Image (tube, rainbow, N blue to C red):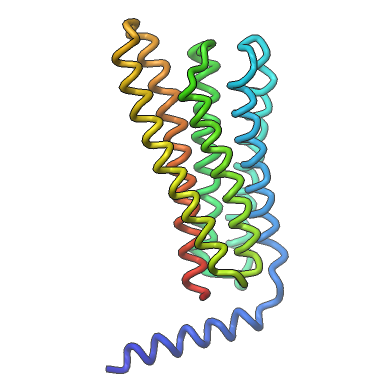
Length: 224
């Protein structure tokens, strides 16, 4: 009987508590650094698939550096969680947000590593399209992180997350068509495996972008 009222009381106390908490100077700078590096990684990967194979090595090196930088930021965020009692929002949400960003970086890095390792010189339209979709999704993640910092425009956060979800659905369609085309037109088993591995990593990156969107929307709803 009293459960709904108790829930409202807890939500009200949480709102008051959040209002009294000093402005966060630890976690959001890390979120912003991670999202900025993520956008640069996505840009670098998209550029890499649009240059001749002989020019890709420097792009691969930069992708490696950016992925390592995001891993370090993720580690710092987890360390800050262990050191700080006061956080801008729920501790598990902080963990989920930074980890989901790190997961996007991991899969884009994996795609680049596979292209280099398997010597994928000929880049298909589908690979280019997926890197383009991931770049747009990562840019939207950056927008969402900035909106979360202020937590004033719930609609903007929701709209941003909705756009990321649409991009993920678009990536699924591109991936399915690309795999079908490979099996229909490619006779070399090695090439089938190589291209499918790269496409799978890129499609998984878009899935992880959706996971970031889900976490951002969850945080937004909790603080609405």
